Image (cartoon, rainbow, N blue to C red):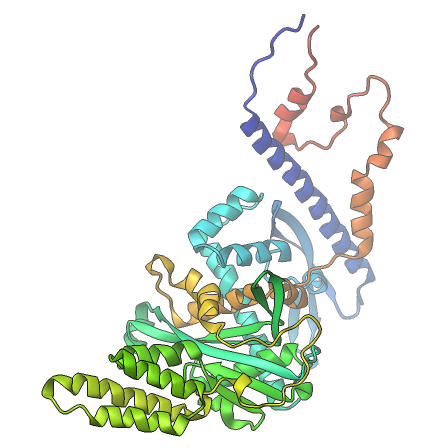
Amino acid sequence: MIIPQPSVDIARLEEEIFKAVCEIGCNLLREALEKYDEELMQSRDKSVYRHKGKKPTSLKTTMGEVPYSRVLYEFEDEKGEAGRVYLLDQALGMAVCGQISKVLAEKIAETSCEMSYRKTAEAISSMTGQTISHGGAWNVMQSLGEQVDQREKSDALLAKQDKSKGEHEVELLFEEQDGVYLNLQGKDREKHGFMHEMKVSIAYEGAKKTGKDRYNLSGKVACANFEPASDFLKRKEGVIAAYYNVDEINMRIFNSDGANWMKGNLADDTVHYQLDTFHRNKAIIENIRDPEMRNILYKLLYNKQIDKLLDVIEAYANSMEDAEDLQEEKKARALYTYFQNNKDGLILYKRRGLELPKPPEDIAYRNCGAMESNIFSLIGRRMKRRRANWSIKGGNNIARMLTLKATGLLHRTFSSFASMCLPERYGQEIETTLSAAKSPRRVGKGYNGFAHAEIPPTQKWMKDLFALKPIC
């Protein structure tokens, strides 16, 4: 007969076990950090670095906060001035993200790209062993955004000097640009107004088929910023050159809605400009009321009779004589000006007789027009919901992370500037400590393994719980 045991709340049990395991992991990491610091102390150049005692600190990780001590050293620089340094921080690259592990920083960035900072803090605190506030999540995003900003500015300078290091080679590159107006807050609202335009740019090599009548952009890179057009165009070129080998690009197809700030892309003879078909057709619908006239304009566009198209629009505007038609005349003249300013882009690039290079394998050259969807997926979904308001600096920082996440380059970027690595032997030691291969040496008949497990002293109830045996 089995005597019923007191009921155990499985949800609470799961939470407590998770906390206990995280605490074990924190202890292992603390031991590894302090042991590595000890090795650095023994192997340092003692004539350069003078031991000034140990200082306590902590590292925020997905397992929780890891308190540990590391040695502070004093040294003299080339000018003979005294300086202080933690060799452990230098060796691990902790100055990059502060006292936050790369894994935790990346999780905060990914979550912040999907939800508000407050909900990000709640999600991270509930799903990991680390508790953070919404202000802490905001601080991490600002730090990471500023680092990406420095990287993009450096790439822009290298692109200007023709020293870019992009490796992906294509002969034809597609570019699209647009803007999205976002609400501002505080002093930035006083300076720029209630709303300000964030400029967005994407570039890609073509489209890859992923299903029946479904395609995804291939090799997409993107950037977004509130900055002036001249600075943004330099940033955009840097982002492209950091991924693509621009020396191999022989032709660019540039698609936009015809905004004046985008005209700086047309300085190169290899760039072929196309007015976005959505905005082109939308302009006709909004400015021409007569359905028959609309059809005439569409036919002229299809037949590539651009000069005649402009003449017809002008004649239509001049035909408005009655006072009640003044508004229609005004709209027709606005359409004429819009088409006149974008005359070279009214015909689709595929219908101009251009000799296009052969597309890469599994890549198709499709009609442009992906920018409207990307405005939402890159920026609008996160930054225009919930009546959100932004500062210029804060909006720029999160926009950089959003573009990296949407293009699949977030992890690659973290790996390049936020690496924190212990020597490989520490990973082997931890693996040996936790390996099941060691268990036969100690586990025998009737052996209670939990009596030898490294259960934290704050979790004594676990040892008592797992030591329980059914009474038969």
